[in-house]
Length: 420
Image (cartoon, rainbow, N blue to C red):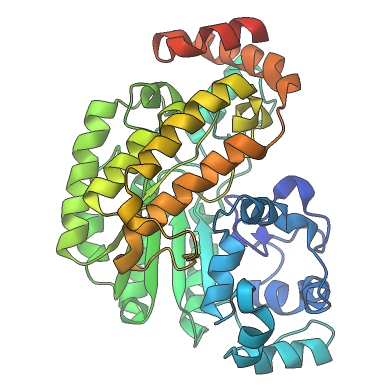
């Protein structure tokens, strides 16, 4: 289950928002309880899944699987004991089989509660990442409003309401099989609700039963939050960064890669000290893909995970698929050469779905890197989006007083052709 920044429920944290036609009309924490939404409102969706139908909102995962990238769908299935290569066999042995049967008999209804949550606490953020959206960044929202890119600011963050926050914690307390909570924002480290929830869960004793995950943009250090996290059974730490190259400053404005690296090293140190699962979180796009190798190299050296939720599809004009074949070949060749330089870890016969297996971190890094080689080589060009990209860059740069060519001069021919 997922709660968006404005309190809107979604059946999956990775659902394709532009292709989500199966579910009931949107419901929010203001008008519907999470129990009602999950158990009743999603009945038609579950019935479709139980009938073996493809879900339009799942297109992001289908695309990832086509390019041999482990999708969130595969990761979630693994939590139920189901694996796609042996679907029928593992479905029959799943510990959730009886729940599936009951739901099928009840036209998709269920009596269980969500066990895995992604909780979007709001758009309170100190960064204006160029590929982000106002719904996830208050800084970007203010900038977009001034530039005329949006007419109205996003709806109020649901987690700012003390009563809604209290009701949600009560729901979590009553969920007997609650397993995982992942918090995003905005920037979680400066979002007041994050610290409040961490404290409340400790008060009711959930901290010893549930795994906590969160994502930070590596611009903030809050010792009080770190002290709270050390009281949890398990912590999954996601650190957002696009590459270890100056272009990261442009993409994740106004951060500076020199400062980011220092905080990154501090998080890795504290994470390893407490045995946390540490992962780099990246959103490869039209500009960062040229330097994505720097991130894979870093993760490989440090033996820490690296993960992107999907192939970027919003905003459309930041997709890797905008690049022409010649540019793609150059990037693909360099990335392939790096993968081949670590042949001792390569095993093309093994598909690593459990990306959190600490014994297979380096193998998975190479597997994930290969998925981007596949994407670069196979996905059709979308040159019709060039003009939209150029117009967006010019408008956003008029506010920030910077220039993409100062960070990525190798893109000049491409951008000039696009009208930059």
